[in-house]
Amino acid sequence: MSMKVSTRQVDGITILDLSGRITLGEGSVQLRDSVRDLLAKGSKYILLNLADVNYIDSSGIGELVSAYTTVRNQGGELKLLNLTKKVHDLLQITKLYTVFDVKDDEASAIASYTRA
Image (tube, rainbow, N blue to C red; front, side, top):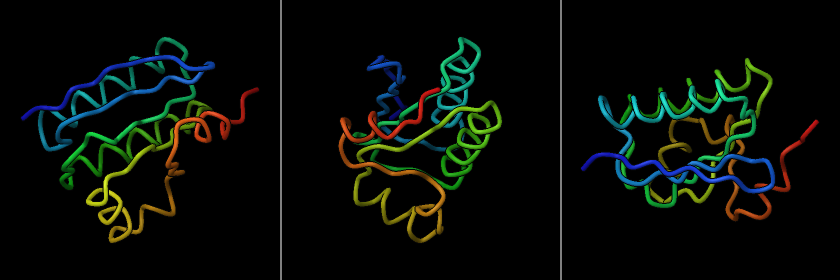
């Protein structure tokens, strides 16, 4: 099963609704391309909605970290929303839970961005 990405805007924040698996190959490439496209278009505030992501492998984790770093280096913010228990546990084990800004509901996630 490949990953699906849909994009929407809420109050100047770009939300990427991801579903499926973020794995080596198609899933991680789609994530990378989506984030780079948004940055190229000037979107600096990105929220990854992972509610429908049921699996992330090590390559997918690397891609999340890479996306986070790329967005930060361009002066933006990337946050994670609606982690499934499996993804939440994975971020805890890899100690990345403390790196990412993780939110549980969309309204508070959108309110948490520091817009210039």
